[in-house]
Image (cartoon, rainbow, N blue to C red; front, side, top):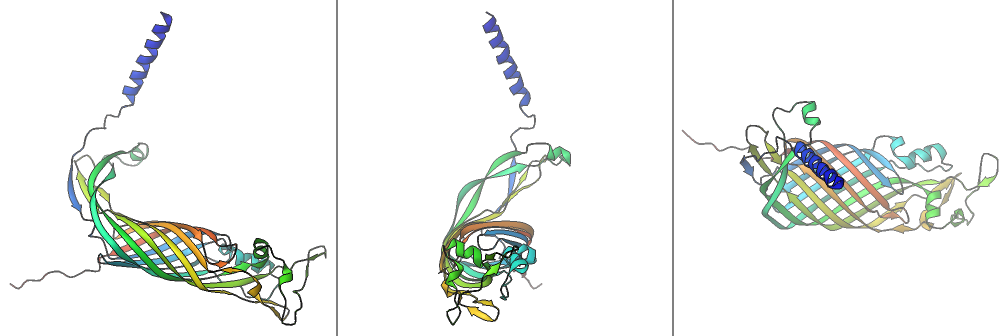
Length: 343
């Protein structure tokens, strides 16, 4: 009897608690579609990237960049991108070389340039849904921040693009030769000058012999070939008087590229007026990458992107992961003409 009474009390408390947790504002909403036009997006997007961060096995770095994307109707799109580090301290290998290098090589500043295009193999739209969060006009300040927002699924069109990508890239960077030799299971003995003499031996703080701290520069020029998939929504609705308008204008692209770099150059090592060929270091002309880019079809907004892969260059130090944020992003449709009629 007691067990039955306890079970009944627990069940009653559970029901009361569940009922109390139901939100009073969780009511159906009505809306009016303002537009649903995934093909009516802006043509030109210009993005300033105040911050990017890259974990590259050859050279960890961070800095800023600039990017521009142009959509040519529903046929093609073109993209140009450049970035560089803030200063020497954000170009890790160059900074370490500045403090420790025992050779006379001038270490390159990290720069990256890329230009390419995407051909729309298939460009179509289909029915879909999007989730929009409901923001009450009466919510201000802490009222909005302290609540879990309600959401509603809105029917809309989604534009999908299957693309073929082709482009070129160029980048240069400093290289820590001591770390590179370890990655390639080699020693300083591989370096010889024109007369066959070995590279000099350095000394540590106690006067004991040790390898010289050697740094050099690398430049890489290559092509990439790949594919992409884009999802474009451009829909806005006007909810009933309680809520603000809802918008979903995200342009999201996922891509995968194969990278081929016919040109991988390494500066020779220079010590005390003698030159030691860098040809003994192994290079790799192949690589790949996969990533995403997201932006919004607005005159002024922000965007994000990231990629991971193996970069051509010195063998054993190609892995990298990159994250970048763009703000502001300015976009326009480049169409300022209006119809004119005679009176």
